[in-house]
Image (cartoon, rainbow, N blue to C red; front, side):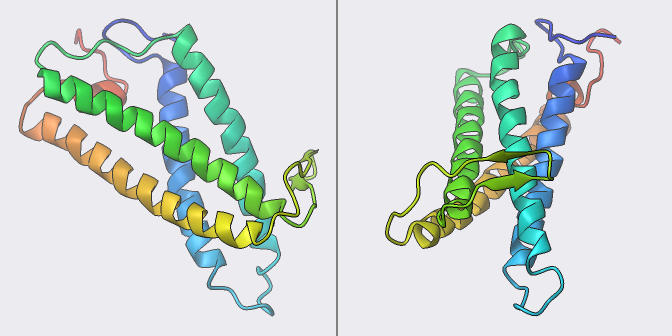
Length: 185
């Protein structure tokens, strides 16, 4: 089993983190959209936000690990067939996705702690409220959170479409590589 990345292939840890984060982000996006449509007397009105917050904190921890892991196990080198523009645009999109994800998680924290209450993560541990008492903190952070969430979803769709373009039009190994296939087979 190949845990770390090589110069040509993603390791199992990177693949697991990539797909776990992708599925979680889309799940959180759907949960967030559903949550804001709930009425006060709906039985999920209080439960759904608690689940959303808890998953968000865990996702933040996973994302911190992901950044550290990228230094421990650098990603494979770009394919030789990539143009300079492709290499630069791929790097920019990856950096933007990281920035957007961390910004979403931080804005979610600011929404959740605006009232001074800690975030209880599945009754395992709590994250204290550090920044509180700012005028309209929850509303401002909430609006930013929504725009950032839509941005990361749209950018990740473009990211996926680029992988499909590489697979179907360029006939290169880009998509297969992130799906865990061995380039030597």
